[in-house]
Image 1 (cartoon, rainbow, N blue to C red):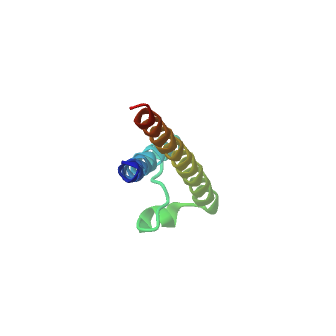
Image 2: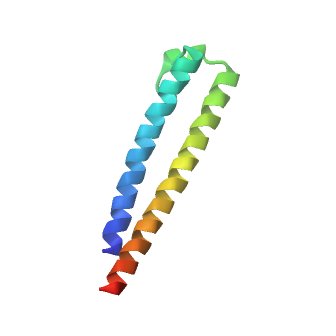
Length: 89
């Protein structure tokens, strides 16, 4: 069951990362009024200043790190809770 919880944790982490990325993109657009500078968006890249590109990279990295920490903690808590209840039975 431990392996199953780790797989579920990985899936939740991927999903949370996807949602977090979309959230950062949406907030970036609402705050700056511009599309976020992404490698595959040539129009946004051409318009982005270095300050905007670095700002977006920093914000994205911070959100990614927070999501990773929170999902890891949640997975560890779920594994500990499962192991604790399995020991009682």
